Image (cartoon, rainbow, N blue to C red):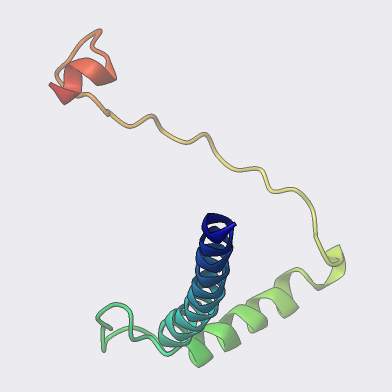
Length: 100
């Protein structure tokens, strides 16, 4: 009976730790998202266009050129994507060949 009580106590302790870890993970996620939206996750380029100007430019372009197409607009015809020389110099080679 004593072993059962010990096991139950350990299970309750682990459950409490898990709840605390979930709460900490949620707080960490929020702090990461906040840092991302503030532009603090990667070094910022001072020559980049401010987001407010970019958004204004995008709104102007959309409003003028595509106002009559509705919310989703027409499918766009994209030109063929050129093939990239992934394994240049390896005629008939595979990814395994390129790796080693």
